[in-house]
Image (cartoon, rainbow, N blue to C red; front, side):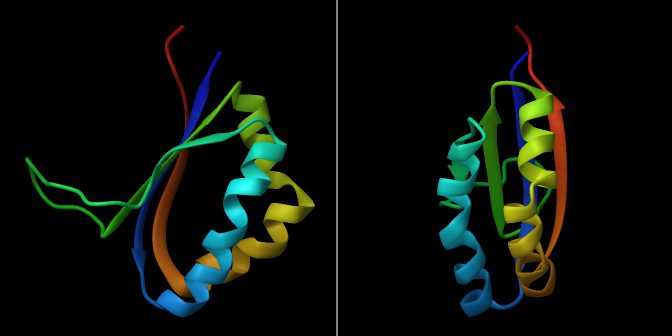
Length: 95
């Protein structure tokens, strides 16, 4: 079943965050991931939210978890954690 990594992000250090973000596409692709949303303009129609949203599609929850727990991602994760405030979830889609 397809799974999605959904991140709600407020970037606090744009320079450092760019170092992290510049590595994420190739790494997600290595685990079968595909970015659906990566920042971009947003229009809040109800409530408010963070400055940035990211959605990555993976072929399965297991693939998404492998990506997140991989040594390669864990190596760059501290950059994201120090350069932003964020919530990140893995959600299974509907098939």
